[in-house]
Image 1 (cartoon, helix red, strand yellow):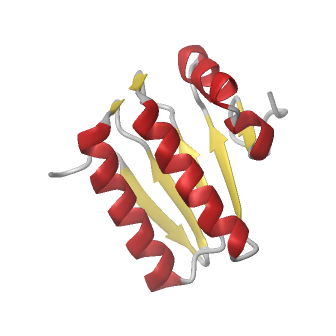
Image 2: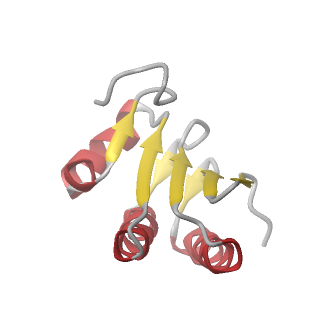
Length: 113
């Protein structure tokens, strides 16, 4: 299964461009790709870019929390950027906004929400 998003690595930082829809099926693929990239590249921070995402179920929260645990254990960091209002609502209700930084735009351009 191909992901319509993508992965970008710069030094030890990974940016994940999340797909338009994140459900149980796509979450498994995304998770395995990210975990492989973390191990293979010594990733220390992950940025999840939700710019194109219009739907996410609880499996998307699972992606974020699982990668947060991995990064936190290794002393790394995870952040979310460019989530639309409905995705931000899910992130808030799930408690994600209490444990990781969530930005409306790119971190250097906007304040934390």
